[in-house]
Image 1 (cartoon, chains in turn purple, green, brown, orange):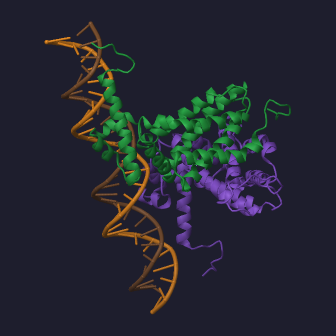
Image 2 (cartoon, each protein chain N blue to C red):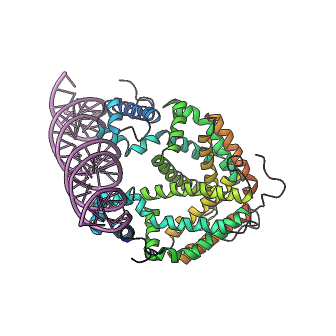
Image 3 (cartoon, rainbow over the protein chains, first blue to last red):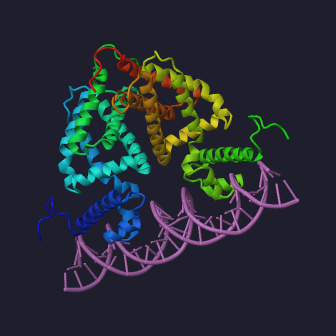
Length: 220
Length: 220
DNA sequence: TTGTCAATTGTCAGTGGCTGTCACTAGCCT
DNA sequence: AGGCTAGTGACAGCCACTGACAATTGACAA
């Protein structure tokens, strides 16, 4: 019997992982080629050779599978943010975290699906009303998470001081515009969105990168 | 035959309007008392004594009816923004427009449903995932509209200069946080949300209210 | 190896949002 | 009065999603 190292989680577990990956891959492929609405869950299930019921055991909704990869990207960003040195101000930290995340996600994504497919998916999300709505809700949850991280970095209480949430909301707003504009523009590559991120943040930065710890902080 | 003045749009038209208003009122009442998900379209239709099919002829989805009043509020804001004097900077204009809108919407809403019901609806939207998603997507469309208004005011081209969209995104982000915090807080009145709006915008203002027309404007 | 347990899956039936179709009713207009 | 047509109801059907139960299969111990 082989020692169950960290790379041998048992047959059952591996099978599950394979099914999950297959569902993601097939879903994104169908979504990006035929469109999200024109793809039925039955179709996906059939292509992966599982029952429709099983699909819903892996993903609680058709929407969720569309965000499976996106979720990894977001987690990468949060990790990057937590890693930023504490002496950085909130905006610098967020800014550097996004850019660092864009540098690293390529590898992370490639472990599940081709980066190309992820980019197409991202574009599809932006242009499918139902998915755009879901995306924005997810972003908003994300912002809450980030606001808490920022607050912790600054030693503040999110519920007592509105500044973390406000700053993150403004930052998030810019990130969303970046995503939209990237989708509309011609350069649909990872480098493209990274460059755009940098450029757009430059517009907000000069106006917002004040240090909160300095005197003159606004009242509670 | 009575002269069809502006207040006499024909029996058929009036009947339609009454059906529509009834659908809105009943829907919001049911949504806010039983919850959105636990209210079926059949239920609404039955209460108004129309067929389910007719409901969908008035509103393209169950979601849409939930935003019928919200839509009026948004339109009020855009009107207020357009009315702002051109010498005001973008942020001052948006800020004053929101506050002016909060002052006026009371009357506008009351023509259709009690303001009380609208406030309860607003709260319900914030706390129902499916509606929150829809709300955010609508907000994002709203921001695009506003960005164009702002750009026109400043004599800019939205597609050439990213600043209008970025500024509006940041502003919109703060407005959304305001809505959320209002929902979580104790003071669920129109005055409450107006005050909170003012307070939160004060936090962003000092950092962002620079004049774009001054020298030192960022590059393209 | 084999039997048992528990996790995973398939099948089936049902709910609810939403759409197309078609016949019918009722306001409108000459 | 009578034809026209907007608005409606009734019906059938698609699809996302869920609960319940039975069948299967990997895990693990005897």
